[in-house]
Length: 61
Image (cartoon, rainbow, N blue to C red; front, side):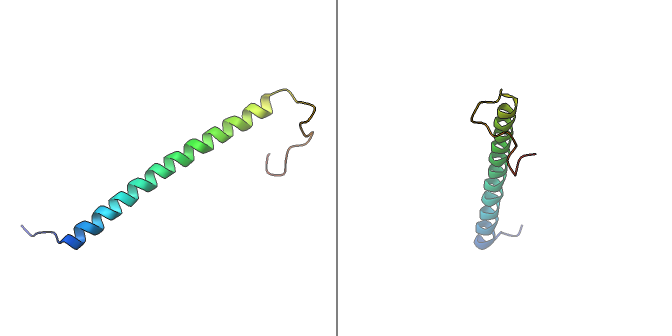
């Protein structure tokens, strides 16, 4: 059986760690997006307050 070099193991482990970090970041960003959408929907469903703008902002549909 051929032995795997230390350099390859170091690189493989670093890539595996980076992949896991990116997966966790993606999950966190998706959760934040869901929360932001829920907040937006709560605001649009709430009765208008006297200080609320009559027209939606430029980035909101």
